[in-house]
Image 1 (tube, rainbow, N blue to C red):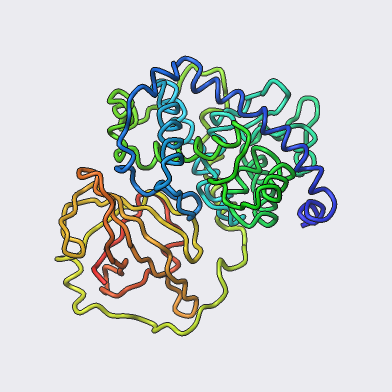
Image 2: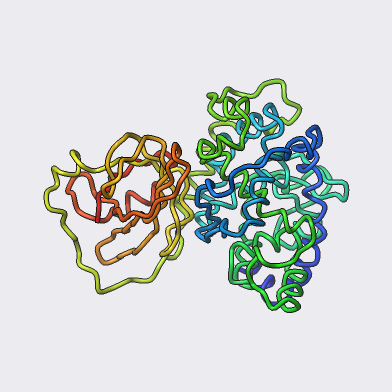
Length: 414
C-alpha cells in the first residue's frame, strides 16, 4: 500500500524521529498510573530466588534469564506492575474487552500477538489517555506521527482514539521497524526510543541483542514492562513467590463489567467487537510460510486409542504466531505422565512450531520444556501435539487458523 511505500522510502526517518519523541514521553501516563502509589524500595526489599523463574519468550525469542541482570529486571517489572491490585484488575477488564479486537488485527498484519501488551504499557488501554507532550490514544501517537501512519487528526475527530484504526497504524509501524532491525525485540525497543536512536546504539556498541545493549533508563526497562504484563496475564501462577497473595487473588478473580468509569471507551459494544474480529479474520493475507517439502504426510502413533489413555492435555495460553520457530505456551489441564515424568495440572508446556506443511495442510508442534509450578524447576522433555481423533502427529491448519486462548491439544511422547 502507498503508506508502507512512503514509510520505507521517504518518510521512514521522519516517522522514526517523531515516534522517538512520542514514546519517550508517552509512557509517562502509564508509569505514573501503575507505580506512583507504591514505594519502590519497599516493593523490592525481598530477594527472590532467580533460579526458579520459568522460561520466558517475547515473540518467540527466548529471554536470557540465565543472566542475573536480566532476571532481576524482569522481577523488578513484575513487582512494579503488581503494586496496585485495583489498578491491575481494571486493566484486566479492559484487556478482556479489547484483546479480541486487537489480536486479529495483529495476526492479519503478521505482527506477533505479544504486542497486544504494548498498549497496556503505553496507555493502560485508555483511548482518551494523553501524555504531557500531546501523545494520544491507546498506542500513544503524537499528531504528526499519527498522520504519517495514515490516521486523521483534526479538531473534533481524532483516530488515535479509535481502537481499530490506531491498532492498524501501530501494526504498520511495527512491521516497518521489524523490517529495518530484523528483530521483534529491537522493534519494541525502537517503538519506545525511535529507530534512529536504536540504529545509533547498535552501530556504536556493535551489539544487536536488546538485552545486552546499553540504553537509556526508560528504553532499558521498556521491554521488561511488556514482558511483565504478559507473564502476569498469562502465567501468573508461576510467580507465587514474587506476586503478593492479594494480587494473586485479584488475578484469579472472575471479571465483572466496569461501571461508573470516566472513559466511555473502556467497554466496547459487543457488535463492534464482533465486526472488528470478523473483518480482521476474513481479510485475505499471504500465506504465513512458503511450502515446505520433504515431510511424510502423516506420522502415525502406535495406537490412536492410546492417545486418550496415555496422552496429556494442555490448554493454549499464548501463541506468538503461526511461523516456524515460534514458541507457544500451554498449561496442563490435568495430572499425568509426560516423557516418564509425573506432571501436574497447571504446569507450563513450552512448544515450538516445528514445521508448517502446506502440502498436507498441517502444523507440527513439538514441546521441549516443561516448568513445574510446584517444584519451581524447568525440565527438558520431548512431546508432540497429536490429532486426538486419529492419534497422528500434526494439527490441521483450518483448526489452527481459529486458535484462541483456551484451545486444548493432546500431547504424546516422541
